[in-house]
Image (cartoon, rainbow, N blue to C red; front, side):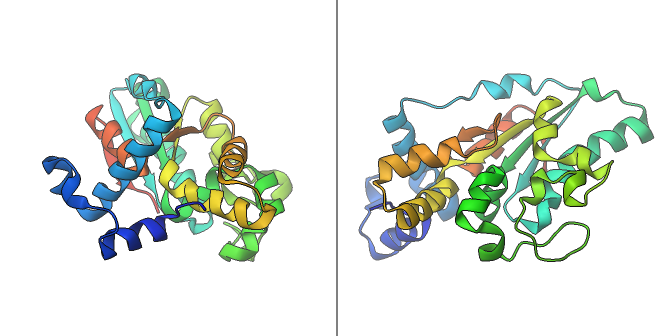
Length: 231
């Protein structure tokens, strides 16, 4: 059976997982960060490491990390592109001198999944997702919408796939992905290992999976990125 975030939190609350056995520095962290680090470290060891070289791409004169924990019609993803255009238009700073990391975590993890995943598992209806412009219910991933979805330019240029294609760094929380692994297990009646493999295949091409969203945000800040709560 897959261990979801809720189950992991419940286990901590009931003492089923001995926090006291963790290193002192880890035990002293806030609960949410301690959870992310513990879960991410265990999964990272099992999977043979993580791709963290994206940090080397945060080289612009101005660097920002956009933290997206909620779906919010995909607006958090849009904001990760909008700021650079405003800096270029208003301040005259070339886009090449701006670096952006986008962290998709918590409830927003579904934004990092391809439309096929949304169709197969009914994500739009299950999450009550609204179209970013019409505010009507939608079955489409708002982070991937374009003209055929009623999102014209320039808003269509803010989509996640176009953000990645332009050099933006898109990061996804592996801890949040476990909820989707559990969804695949329940729906398709498959083992956890198979569900995990399927979930990873459904990630939008170019999205880099990280131990947790908190881990990704902290790494970006260590590289000099200014923090922005984007949703």
